[in-house]
Amino acid sequence: MRSIVLIAVILFHGFSISQEQTIIENISIVSPHLSGPMHNATVVITSGKITSIMSPDQVYKHQPNKQPQTLQRNIIDGEGLYLVPGIMDSHVHVSSIPGMGFGVEPVAQKHQELAEAYYQQQPASFLYHGVTQVLDPNPGLNWSRFTETSAHPDFFRCEVVASKNTFPLVEKNDELSKTMFTYLVDEQAGKNTENSPESIVQRIASSGATCIKLYFEDGYGNESYWPLLSDSTLKRIRTAATKYDLLVLAHANAVDMYEKAIEYDVDVIAHGLWNWNEFAKENDVPPQMATILDALREKSIGYMPTQRVIAGLGELMLENSHKATEFKKVTPKPLLEWYSQPEAHWFKDDMRQGFDGLPDEVIARIFLTGRINKGEKVMQMLNRKEHPILLGSDFPGSPSFANQPGLTTFLEMKAMANAGISLSDILEASTINNARQFKLQEHYGTVEEGKVANLLLLNQNPLETIDAWNDINQVILHGDVFERDSFAADKTGINGISINEE
Ligand SMILES: [Zn+2]
Image 1 (cartoon, rainbow, N blue to C red):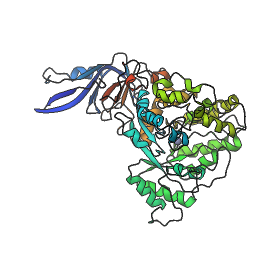
Image 2: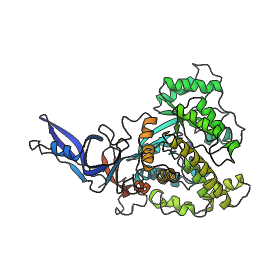
Image 3: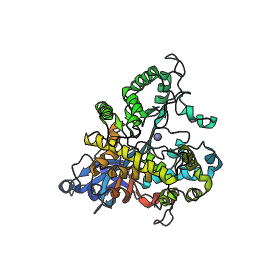
Image 4: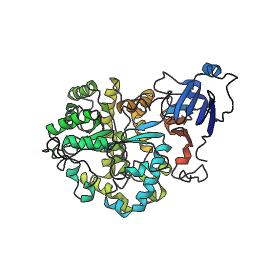
């Protein structure tokens, strides 16, 4: 049985109302709105929402003898468990298959059955790791594969606005790759013409998107060879986005691109600041960069460290990175087996070419120590100044197979811990900060009455160890309760029951 939610009949003011109700008793609540765990609480979930939270003395008061007891309830004994909000990863790409790319690359075209197996498992893998909300800033062509599955995290998306002459279009040389981009702006077009910035933004708003993604990328690393959208186009997009209540996300990871993105008042910068350009030799954030980061703070622009992008590139260059045991829980077996084939190592070859034949271990170190370290320095500085950090992994970040769904989100949280971010700040980054930044705090981000019942029951206290986030007992999605292992790719521990059987 995949869900242990029972139908309960509640007699209320003389009317008979049929409702699904789950009651979690004796639970310790850990939520960013509380200063510490609330022990021995009772949480009532009705029709997918948290309808009541009671501390032990309130429970006593709220159980008068005369209450009609025809109620059938699904009761969970939360003794020894911790109830936390479900995780939100606000930077994932659900069309992109680790090791293959966005589904438009030749390997994905050739191995459609592997792509299919991946798309079927992916939402479950996020849920296996407690990720109950995702935001995809570049959803590509296959995002509906994600939302079509029977159980999936709540899905939010941005749509990319670019022109034929700017990144990422400028880098694509086959027609199939170009089809990924639906909203191509004509920078010369007058306000009311078809592909003007204003018309494009309006179309994106009516498609149901939450945000727009703009690329501030003039070349990888320190290079500068691609044009950006013009100043006037960027201003027109910003104005139109505000009008239609869309947030603007910026791809930027270099100092000069950060400066630009901040100048155009974007709402979130969706990558850590790893490329220090002329400051690359510095060990600490230099004053010039600190000034730029102060501007980011003053404008309340969201910061996503996305450390796993860098780690995913570095780990790819290590031998046998695809044989990590954690992958078995989140990656379909046939895809795991494919990673051992020479054909699956095409992106590794691309990387080698980019580094002029340096040994793999040296390339790995450039990422795993050098750039990771720079990202950590910036994260630490912002955290010291109490700027809220957002959990966004940019999964899978590249065609690297070192990043796998759900697991990468957990590893991104671990990367924050490695950078010295406190466990309570990591709790906030993974829940309420994302909810606030994306204007979803009415529904998500805390364990409070009125919010969507996307919750996790953990075996350990996440304010004591980061590993608590990988020690999940049950996942609650819109009030439905699932055993963690029911989402595993290998389904061990639940006698082979598939979540798709119902
Ligand atoms: Zn991304």
